[in-house]
Length: 201
Image (cartoon, rainbow, N blue to C red; front, side, top):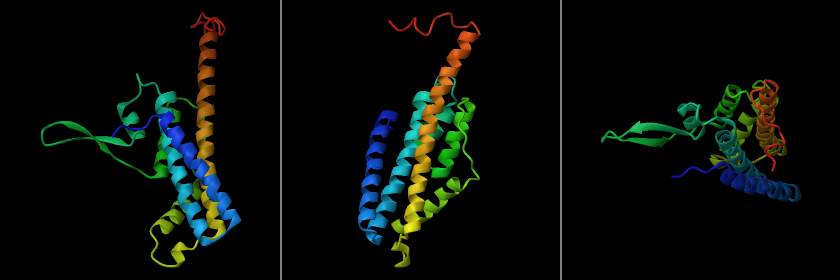
């Protein structure tokens, strides 16, 4: 199955983010368990889409594909490799948790000198775990208690969505500034004799 590019993932992530807005409005108009459950499911789907979008952005706009590790790119794509009985190599999908994916993003950004900071001890980071537990409970209910979602739990899921969205935006801005800074350093070091304006014809 062909993996989505960043631009494809950007489109579907935007659709799911709009779903979050609509689900939030419905929940605020009618704060019932039904609409809170809907909000939890919708929000976590959007979070997972943002995480995938973030990794596709790294592949297309941050890492240098000529020098990047094959393992690095495969990990971002959630792929590993195996060999069948005929000795043929094939791609084997390998998923991992949202938090592991975000830690991978941070590691790749650090390796490619993009100045993004993620506080793994912050309340916002811990909140991702709480949101996942709420989502799992709602998706796989075993009792009436499991399908009851409080206002605080809905807010927890929303804050996790906002947090991951902020990481995505920070990555895009941080990589853009890193690229500009690299070009400036080349000019200052005399390695690039062209002017910023010479290429604009």
